[in-house]
Length: 298
Image (cartoon, rainbow, N blue to C red; front, side, top):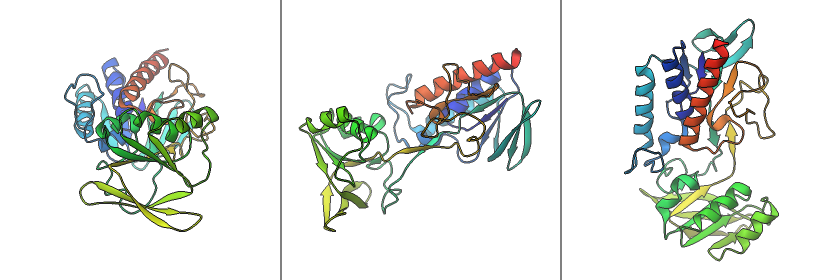
């Protein structure tokens, strides 16, 4: 079996596959861990009551999976062909397998402004569920105008003193029901027709440099954190002609993580309707591996 992706979903799939006795190889084009390595402290993963850094958690996962015989290879997948078995083309050569688990993850869309990369994890976040608790009783901003942005703002309003929603247009894209909830929340203030030009701070974020797209007027907003919610894109480029995708490009699976072609499974953030949490990604990986084992055995 071939596992594509070395985040929590892929590593958990590898652990279960190796323990089940499948000859398994995990392919990862970059660093192991995926999005979770950017988390300075993970406090909602069971078994670590004091929290654990994302990097350390991934290290434990990788060590545990390889302990049981999972082989890992740094390689980029460039194509998948189906014959009597599946042939996966990689930057290190071709590999054949009876089953594939796609755990390639997804990437948050960035603002691509000065200071964003440098202050990521230091006031810049892409996950309100993950990091909102750290900003209790502080002032934060959410960038975006869709359902995710409004959901994040409403969640943050439960913890934070003030939540600004920064949106480049003069109306939200979120559903009417979500908009009404935001408008009725006294802690939320909307900044219309506004974009972030720069994220400012030394060691931690201190303010946002903003511009009104209609008037051209610039301003500075002093806040403690910013949550970027302008979309997420699945790493589906290699698989878009292989499996069925939803309208946003995420891989469609059933409850057993099966995709449209037999023998191919998907797990984690690349999958349709994923909660994009480390624990649900791990659960997906376990389910995909057990389903793949059943498929290969049959």
